[in-house]
Image (cartoon, rainbow, N blue to C red; front, side, top):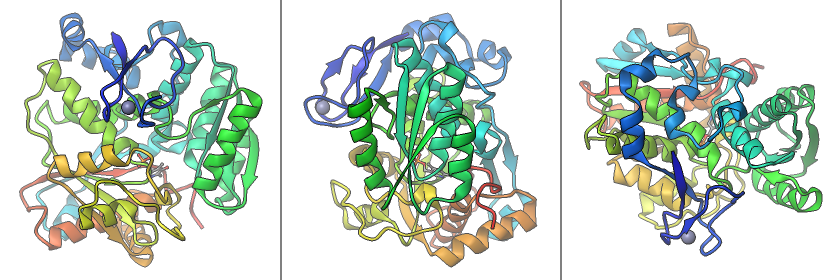
Length: 383
Ligand SMILES: *Cc1c(COP(=O)(O)O)cnc(C)c1O
Ligand SMILES: [Zn+2]
Protein backbone atom coordinates (compact mmCIF):
# COMPACT_ATOMS: atom_id res chain seq x y z
CA UNK A 1 0.00 0.00 0.00
CA UNK A 2 2.96 2.19 -0.78
CA UNK A 3 1.71 5.38 -2.42
CA UNK A 4 4.78 7.42 -3.24
CA UNK A 5 7.83 9.10 -1.74
CA UNK A 6 7.71 12.52 -0.19
CA UNK A 7 10.40 15.02 0.77
CA UNK A 8 9.81 16.14 4.37
CA UNK A 9 11.68 19.41 3.74
CA UNK A 10 10.30 20.78 0.47
CA UNK A 11 7.14 18.69 0.15
CA UNK A 12 7.94 17.33 -3.27
CA UNK A 13 6.38 13.95 -4.21
CA UNK A 14 8.22 11.33 -6.24
CA UNK A 15 7.06 8.06 -7.78
CA UNK A 16 8.06 5.07 -5.67
CA UNK A 17 8.15 2.53 -8.47
CA UNK A 18 11.49 3.62 -9.79
CA UNK A 19 14.81 3.76 -7.97
CA UNK A 20 15.25 6.96 -5.96
CA UNK A 21 18.01 8.21 -3.76
CA UNK A 22 17.44 11.64 -2.15
CA UNK A 23 15.17 14.57 -3.04
CA UNK A 24 16.31 15.90 -6.43
CA UNK A 25 15.24 19.43 -5.43
CA UNK A 26 16.82 19.80 -1.99
CA UNK A 27 18.92 16.66 -1.29
CA UNK A 28 16.88 15.71 1.79
CA UNK A 29 16.21 12.03 2.53
CA UNK A 30 12.88 10.84 1.09
CA UNK A 31 10.13 9.20 3.14
CA UNK A 32 7.78 6.47 1.92
CA UNK A 33 4.07 7.27 2.17
CA UNK A 34 1.36 4.63 2.50
CA UNK A 35 -2.37 4.47 2.06
CA UNK A 36 -3.07 4.16 5.79
CA UNK A 37 -6.85 4.01 5.50
CA UNK A 38 -6.60 1.13 3.06
CA UNK A 39 -4.07 -0.57 5.34
CA UNK A 40 -6.38 -0.14 8.35
CA UNK A 41 -9.26 -1.68 6.38
CA UNK A 42 -7.27 -4.67 5.23
CA UNK A 43 -5.63 -5.71 8.51
CA UNK A 44 -6.35 -5.55 12.26
CA UNK A 45 -3.87 -5.61 15.17
CA UNK A 46 -4.90 -9.14 16.12
CA UNK A 47 -4.31 -10.44 12.61
CA UNK A 48 -0.80 -8.94 12.59
CA UNK A 49 -0.09 -10.56 15.95
CA UNK A 50 -0.98 -13.99 14.57
CA UNK A 51 1.30 -13.82 11.54
CA UNK A 52 4.65 -15.69 11.45
CA UNK A 53 7.24 -13.82 13.53
CA UNK A 54 9.47 -11.24 11.91
CA UNK A 55 9.21 -7.76 10.49
CA UNK A 56 7.26 -8.85 7.41
CA UNK A 57 4.23 -9.12 9.70
CA UNK A 58 3.91 -5.40 8.96
CA UNK A 59 3.79 -5.87 5.17
CA UNK A 60 0.94 -3.39 4.65
CA UNK A 61 3.27 -0.69 5.99
CA UNK A 62 6.38 -1.81 4.12
CA UNK A 63 7.41 -0.92 0.58
CA UNK A 64 7.70 -4.34 -1.07
CA UNK A 65 4.70 -5.00 -3.32
CA UNK A 66 5.26 -8.59 -4.42
CA UNK A 67 5.90 -10.99 -1.54
CA UNK A 68 8.22 -13.11 -3.67
CA UNK A 69 10.80 -10.35 -3.25
CA UNK A 70 10.72 -10.41 0.56
CA UNK A 71 14.11 -11.44 1.90
CA UNK A 72 14.37 -12.89 5.34
CA UNK A 73 17.02 -14.33 7.61
CA UNK A 74 14.79 -14.09 10.68
CA UNK A 75 15.01 -10.34 11.41
CA UNK A 76 12.70 -8.46 13.75
CA UNK A 77 10.49 -9.46 16.69
CA UNK A 78 13.45 -9.12 19.00
CA UNK A 79 12.91 -9.57 22.75
CA UNK A 80 11.75 -6.74 25.01
CA UNK A 81 13.54 -7.70 28.19
CA UNK A 82 12.52 -6.32 31.60
CA UNK A 83 15.56 -5.12 33.54
CA UNK A 84 14.49 -5.23 37.19
CA UNK A 85 17.93 -5.01 38.80
CA UNK A 86 19.10 -2.26 36.52
CA UNK A 87 15.80 -0.43 37.08
CA UNK A 88 16.26 -0.64 40.84
CA UNK A 89 19.84 0.59 40.54
CA UNK A 90 18.66 3.60 38.52
CA UNK A 91 15.56 4.25 40.64
CA UNK A 92 13.12 3.43 37.83
CA UNK A 93 9.93 1.41 38.06
CA UNK A 94 9.70 -0.02 34.54
CA UNK A 95 12.80 -0.41 32.42
CA UNK A 96 13.17 -2.61 29.35
CA UNK A 97 15.95 -3.34 26.93
CA UNK A 98 14.92 -3.99 23.35
CA UNK A 99 17.56 -6.60 22.52
CA UNK A 100 18.44 -6.04 18.87
CA UNK A 101 21.50 -8.28 19.12
CA UNK A 102 19.32 -11.29 18.30
CA UNK A 103 18.85 -10.06 14.72
CA UNK A 104 20.64 -11.87 11.87
CA UNK A 105 24.24 -10.59 11.60
CA UNK A 106 23.89 -9.52 15.25
CA UNK A 107 22.56 -6.01 14.86
CA UNK A 108 19.48 -4.01 14.00
CA UNK A 109 21.10 -3.06 10.69
CA UNK A 110 19.53 -6.34 9.51
CA UNK A 111 16.08 -4.73 9.68
CA UNK A 112 16.99 -1.91 7.36
CA UNK A 113 18.92 -4.06 4.94
CA UNK A 114 16.24 -6.79 4.77
CA UNK A 115 13.67 -4.25 3.61
CA UNK A 116 15.94 -2.07 1.47
CA UNK A 117 17.44 -5.00 -0.43
CA UNK A 118 14.05 -6.62 -0.94
CA UNK A 119 12.75 -3.41 -2.43
CA UNK A 120 15.93 -2.89 -4.48
CA UNK A 121 15.57 -6.43 -5.88
CA UNK A 122 11.95 -5.69 -6.74
CA UNK A 123 13.10 -2.60 -8.63
CA UNK A 124 15.70 -4.59 -10.58
CA UNK A 125 18.95 -3.81 -8.74
CA UNK A 126 21.72 -6.40 -9.22
CA UNK A 127 24.68 -4.76 -7.50
CA UNK A 128 24.86 -2.81 -4.22
CA UNK A 129 27.39 -0.81 -2.24
CA UNK A 130 27.41 0.61 1.28
CA UNK A 131 29.81 2.73 3.32
CA UNK A 132 29.80 1.49 6.90
CA UNK A 133 31.42 1.83 10.26
CA UNK A 134 30.78 -1.88 10.70
CA UNK A 135 27.41 -3.53 11.19
CA UNK A 136 25.72 -2.25 8.03
CA UNK A 137 28.33 -4.02 5.91
CA UNK A 138 27.69 -7.44 7.42
CA UNK A 139 23.95 -6.98 7.04
CA UNK A 140 24.23 -5.73 3.46
CA UNK A 141 26.47 -8.64 2.52
CA UNK A 142 24.13 -11.22 4.07
CA UNK A 143 20.96 -9.95 2.42
CA UNK A 144 22.71 -9.37 -0.89
CA UNK A 145 23.79 -13.02 -0.85
CA UNK A 146 20.21 -13.96 -0.06
CA UNK A 147 19.03 -11.93 -3.05
CA UNK A 148 21.74 -13.21 -5.37
CA UNK A 149 23.21 -9.72 -5.73
CA UNK A 150 26.81 -8.59 -5.82
CA UNK A 151 27.75 -6.52 -2.73
CA UNK A 152 30.53 -4.00 -2.12
CA UNK A 153 31.31 -2.88 1.42
CA UNK A 154 33.42 0.22 2.11
CA UNK A 155 35.01 0.23 5.57
CA UNK A 156 37.34 2.58 7.48
CA UNK A 157 40.75 0.98 7.91
CA UNK A 158 40.48 0.94 11.70
CA UNK A 159 37.13 -0.89 11.84
CA UNK A 160 37.04 -3.94 14.11
CA UNK A 161 38.19 -7.00 12.05
CA UNK A 162 34.92 -8.84 12.83
CA UNK A 163 33.08 -6.45 10.52
CA UNK A 164 35.34 -7.12 7.57
CA UNK A 165 35.34 -10.86 8.13
CA UNK A 166 31.58 -11.26 8.32
CA UNK A 167 31.00 -9.25 5.13
CA UNK A 168 33.74 -11.14 3.35
CA UNK A 169 32.31 -14.47 4.46
CA UNK A 170 28.97 -13.52 2.92
CA UNK A 171 30.70 -12.93 -0.40
CA UNK A 172 31.04 -9.15 -0.46
CA UNK A 173 34.00 -7.35 -1.97
CA UNK A 174 35.67 -5.22 0.73
CA UNK A 175 37.08 -1.77 0.05
CA UNK A 176 39.17 -0.22 2.83
CA UNK A 177 39.55 3.56 3.06
CA UNK A 178 41.91 5.65 5.07
CA UNK A 179 39.62 7.75 7.28
CA UNK A 180 36.15 7.62 8.85
CA UNK A 181 32.64 6.87 7.67
CA UNK A 182 32.43 10.19 5.78
CA UNK A 183 35.46 9.19 3.72
CA UNK A 184 33.91 5.75 3.19
CA UNK A 185 30.76 7.55 2.04
CA UNK A 186 32.66 9.37 -0.70
CA UNK A 187 34.30 6.15 -1.85
CA UNK A 188 30.94 4.35 -1.92
CA UNK A 189 29.45 7.13 -4.07
CA UNK A 190 32.43 6.85 -6.42
CA UNK A 191 32.09 3.05 -6.64
CA UNK A 192 28.35 3.34 -7.23
CA UNK A 193 28.99 5.60 -10.21
CA UNK A 194 31.87 3.53 -11.54
CA UNK A 195 30.21 0.11 -11.20
CA UNK A 196 26.59 1.10 -11.70
CA UNK A 197 25.88 -0.24 -8.19
CA UNK A 198 23.00 1.04 -6.06
CA UNK A 199 24.23 3.00 -3.03
CA UNK A 200 22.57 2.04 0.26
CA UNK A 201 24.29 4.63 2.47
CA UNK A 202 22.14 5.54 5.51
CA UNK A 203 19.18 7.70 4.47
CA UNK A 204 20.51 8.20 0.90
CA UNK A 205 17.77 5.83 -0.20
CA UNK A 206 14.28 5.65 1.34
CA UNK A 207 13.90 2.03 2.44
CA UNK A 208 16.45 1.21 5.14
CA UNK A 209 14.41 3.65 7.21
CA UNK A 210 11.32 1.56 6.50
CA UNK A 211 12.99 -1.55 7.88
CA UNK A 212 14.21 0.27 10.98
CA UNK A 213 10.83 1.80 11.71
CA UNK A 214 9.50 -1.70 12.46
CA UNK A 215 11.15 -1.29 15.89
CA UNK A 216 8.45 1.32 16.52
CA UNK A 217 5.67 -1.07 15.48
CA UNK A 218 7.01 -3.79 17.76
CA UNK A 219 7.26 -1.36 20.64
CA UNK A 220 3.69 -0.15 20.23
CA UNK A 221 2.43 -3.73 20.06
CA UNK A 222 4.49 -4.84 23.07
CA UNK A 223 2.97 -2.03 25.15
CA UNK A 224 -0.53 -2.89 23.95
CA UNK A 225 -0.79 0.26 21.81
CA UNK A 226 -0.07 2.50 24.80
CA UNK A 227 3.41 3.82 24.03
CA UNK A 228 6.06 4.06 26.77
CA UNK A 229 7.02 7.50 28.05
CA UNK A 230 10.70 7.37 27.08
CA UNK A 231 12.85 5.80 24.36
CA UNK A 232 16.62 5.90 24.80
CA UNK A 233 18.43 5.43 21.52
CA UNK A 234 22.19 5.34 20.78
CA UNK A 235 22.38 7.65 17.79
CA UNK A 236 24.73 7.61 14.83
CA UNK A 237 22.98 8.43 11.55
CA UNK A 238 19.69 8.55 13.43
CA UNK A 239 17.75 6.09 11.27
CA UNK A 240 15.92 4.54 14.19
CA UNK A 241 15.39 7.87 15.89
CA UNK A 242 13.61 9.12 12.77
CA UNK A 243 12.04 5.77 11.86
CA UNK A 244 10.22 5.09 15.11
CA UNK A 245 8.27 8.38 15.17
CA UNK A 246 7.36 7.70 11.53
CA UNK A 247 6.01 4.30 12.59
CA UNK A 248 4.02 5.92 15.41
CA UNK A 249 2.52 8.47 13.00
CA UNK A 250 1.49 5.65 10.67
CA UNK A 251 -0.12 3.71 13.51
CA UNK A 252 -1.99 6.85 14.54
CA UNK A 253 -3.07 7.31 10.93
CA UNK A 254 -4.53 3.81 11.09
CA UNK A 255 -6.32 4.62 14.34
CA UNK A 256 -4.32 2.09 16.37
CA UNK A 257 -2.71 4.55 18.79
CA UNK A 258 -3.46 8.06 20.00
CA UNK A 259 -1.41 11.21 19.67
CA UNK A 260 0.79 10.78 22.77
CA UNK A 261 4.43 10.05 21.91
CA UNK A 262 7.50 8.84 23.81
CA UNK A 263 10.24 11.37 24.48
CA UNK A 264 13.10 10.41 22.20
CA UNK A 265 16.46 10.61 23.98
CA UNK A 266 19.44 10.46 21.65
CA UNK A 267 22.66 9.19 23.22
CA UNK A 268 26.05 9.85 21.66
CA UNK A 269 29.69 9.34 22.61
CA UNK A 270 31.56 12.41 23.87
CA UNK A 271 34.14 11.84 21.12
CA UNK A 272 31.51 12.28 18.40
CA UNK A 273 28.44 14.19 19.56
CA UNK A 274 27.17 16.38 16.71
CA UNK A 275 23.50 15.81 17.58
CA UNK A 276 24.06 16.72 21.24
CA UNK A 277 25.89 19.91 20.24
CA UNK A 278 23.08 20.97 17.89
CA UNK A 279 20.40 20.27 20.50
CA UNK A 280 22.34 22.20 23.15
CA UNK A 281 22.96 25.22 20.93
CA UNK A 282 19.49 25.23 19.41
CA UNK A 283 20.92 24.91 15.90
CA UNK A 284 18.69 24.18 12.89
CA UNK A 285 21.28 22.07 11.13
CA UNK A 286 23.93 19.67 12.42
CA UNK A 287 27.54 20.63 11.77
CA UNK A 288 30.17 17.95 11.13
CA UNK A 289 32.12 16.86 14.22
CA UNK A 290 35.86 17.27 13.76
CA UNK A 291 38.14 14.38 14.72
CA UNK A 292 35.32 11.98 15.59
CA UNK A 293 36.59 9.25 17.86
CA UNK A 294 34.87 6.51 19.86
CA UNK A 295 35.10 2.76 20.09
CA UNK A 296 31.33 2.60 19.70
CA UNK A 297 31.58 2.44 15.91
CA UNK A 298 27.85 2.79 15.30
CA UNK A 299 28.03 6.23 16.94
CA UNK A 300 31.04 7.44 14.97
CA UNK A 301 29.06 9.44 12.43
CA UNK A 302 30.47 12.98 12.21
CA UNK A 303 27.38 14.41 10.48
CA UNK A 304 24.03 12.60 10.28
CA UNK A 305 22.73 13.10 6.77
CA UNK A 306 19.10 13.42 7.91
CA UNK A 307 20.04 16.20 10.32
CA UNK A 308 16.78 18.14 10.26
CA UNK A 309 14.69 15.00 10.67
CA UNK A 310 16.90 13.88 13.57
CA UNK A 311 16.50 17.21 15.34
CA UNK A 312 12.74 17.15 14.80
CA UNK A 313 12.54 13.64 16.27
CA UNK A 314 14.32 14.80 19.42
CA UNK A 315 12.79 18.26 19.86
CA UNK A 316 9.34 17.42 18.56
CA UNK A 317 8.96 14.66 21.15
CA UNK A 318 10.14 16.75 24.09
CA UNK A 319 13.27 14.63 24.26
CA UNK A 320 16.91 15.57 24.49
CA UNK A 321 20.40 14.45 23.51
CA UNK A 322 23.18 13.44 25.88
CA UNK A 323 26.85 12.58 25.39
CA UNK A 324 28.68 10.03 27.52
CA UNK A 325 32.42 9.55 28.02
CA UNK A 326 34.27 6.65 26.55
CA UNK A 327 35.20 5.18 29.94
CA UNK A 328 31.61 5.46 31.09
CA UNK A 329 30.11 3.64 28.11
CA UNK A 330 32.60 0.80 28.41
CA UNK A 331 32.08 0.45 32.15
CA UNK A 332 28.30 0.56 31.80
CA UNK A 333 28.26 -2.16 29.14
CA UNK A 334 30.20 -4.35 31.58
CA UNK A 335 27.98 -3.49 34.54
CA UNK A 336 24.79 -4.37 32.71
CA UNK A 337 26.23 -7.69 31.55
CA UNK A 338 27.19 -8.57 35.12
CA UNK A 339 23.94 -7.26 36.63
CA UNK A 340 21.39 -8.61 34.16
CA UNK A 341 23.25 -11.08 31.93
CA UNK A 342 22.55 -8.90 28.94
CA UNK A 343 25.69 -8.60 26.86
CA UNK A 344 25.47 -5.04 25.58
CA UNK A 345 27.36 -3.67 22.61
CA UNK A 346 29.26 -0.45 23.35
CA UNK A 347 26.46 1.59 21.77
CA UNK A 348 24.01 -0.11 24.15
CA UNK A 349 26.39 0.65 27.01
CA UNK A 350 26.35 4.29 25.95
CA UNK A 351 22.56 4.26 25.93
CA UNK A 352 22.29 2.95 29.49
CA UNK A 353 25.00 5.37 30.66
CA UNK A 354 23.05 8.20 29.03
CA UNK A 355 19.87 7.03 30.72
CA UNK A 356 21.61 7.33 34.08
CA UNK A 357 22.35 10.99 33.25
CA UNK A 358 18.77 11.87 32.37
CA UNK A 359 17.45 10.09 35.47
CA UNK A 360 19.94 11.98 37.64
CA UNK A 361 19.00 15.35 36.17
CA UNK A 362 15.27 14.69 36.46
CA UNK A 363 14.44 14.54 32.74
CA UNK A 364 13.27 10.97 33.22
CA UNK A 365 10.97 10.38 36.17
CA UNK A 366 10.87 7.22 38.32
CA UNK A 367 7.36 6.40 37.08
CA UNK A 368 8.22 6.72 33.37
CA UNK A 369 8.22 3.49 31.39
CA UNK A 370 11.57 3.46 29.63
CA UNK A 371 12.84 1.40 26.69
CA UNK A 372 16.57 1.39 25.95
CA UNK A 373 17.85 -0.01 22.67
CA UNK A 374 20.73 -2.42 22.70
CA UNK A 375 21.40 -2.10 19.00
CA UNK A 376 23.77 -5.05 18.49
CA UNK A 377 25.24 -8.09 20.14
CA UNK A 378 28.17 -7.42 22.44
CA UNK A 379 30.03 -10.34 20.90
CA UNK A 380 31.42 -8.75 17.73
CA UNK A 381 33.30 -6.05 19.58
CA UNK A 382 34.52 -8.10 22.56
CA UNK A 383 38.18 -7.64 23.24
C1 LIG B 1 24.41 1.81 13.13
C2 LIG B 1 24.42 1.60 14.57
C3 LIG B 1 23.89 2.56 15.47
C4 LIG B 1 23.34 3.88 15.00
O1 LIG B 1 22.11 3.70 14.34
P1 LIG B 1 21.33 4.88 13.66
O2 LIG B 1 19.90 4.43 13.64
O3 LIG B 1 21.84 5.06 12.27
O4 LIG B 1 21.52 6.10 14.48
C5 LIG B 1 23.89 2.26 16.81
N1 LIG B 1 24.39 1.09 17.28
C6 LIG B 1 24.91 0.16 16.46
C7 LIG B 1 25.46 -1.10 17.03
C8 LIG B 1 24.94 0.37 15.08
O5 LIG B 1 25.45 -0.56 14.28
ZN1 LIG C 1 13.10 18.24 -1.08
